[in-house]
Image 1 (cartoon, one colour):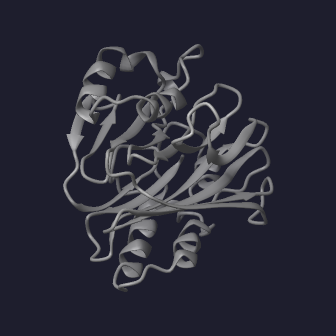
Image 2 (tube, rainbow, N blue to C red; image 1 turned 135 degrees about the vertical axis):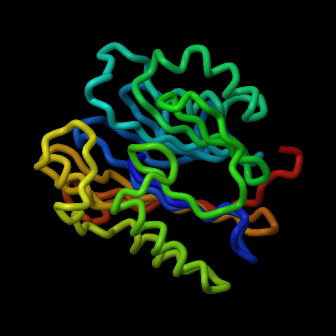
Image 3 (cartoon, rainbow, N blue to C red; image 1 turned 90 degrees about the horizontal axis):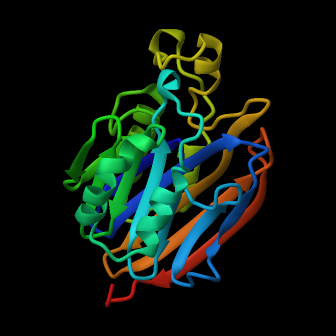
Amino acid sequence: MCLIVFAYKQHPRYQFIFAANRDEFYQRPTRKAQFWNDHPNLLAGKDLKAGGTWMGITKGGRFSALTNYRDPASRKEDAPSRGKLVLNYLKGDNPPEVYLRQLHPKADQYNGFNLLVGSIDKLMYYSNHTEQSVMLDPGLYGLSNDILDTSWPKTDRAKEGLSQIMSSEQIDESELFDILRDDQPAAETELPDTGIPRELERAISPIFIKTEKYGTRCSTILLVDQNGNVTFEEQRFENGSMEIKEKNRYEFELETDG
């Protein structure tokens, strides 16, 4: 994922409101979001190159999502797949604080990442850039390719859009997807400086990215209401386009035994 915006325990009807875009090279093979045959309680897409995933939820309520931390100067060529960080948490049974404590000593083996792990009742954030675990308070958050709530134009616009949507008692799913379809580039004076060429920085500054070889591959929304009812929808796009080639939607109730 390269942009995540979410509201955690901030809405009278929904415990969790999550919207995210996954940006990736078009040539990287990917499987749509579905319940996995070998882990039937796990709902997630799959990176068919390395075997991991970028976000997912289980019927028991375990949740995880990841974005890359952009730092080309520190890139490791043979680093393990960051998608396994999400998958290993979802497949396991350790509480989030235990999982992150065990991850911490080996976190520097990976290229830069931001990781959300937990559940609707306990959500944590960790980055191997800051090397700190944070238990998240109820709030509205944005996450792109810097640390949590860094003020980038795309992140700020997404948070503002979600804040406006949350003023309604009923969340309109189409409005969440509208946030994720914003392809407005940042103004030249507002571009972040992450160590990549300025032209590329501009090209990947929108919420929805469209370049020749790299861009937004899918958009995902996740809603969990106060009764534990889950709505998960993924939209997958034609390369370099907002044309939707596939929709995958799932609705289920969280299991009370976790």
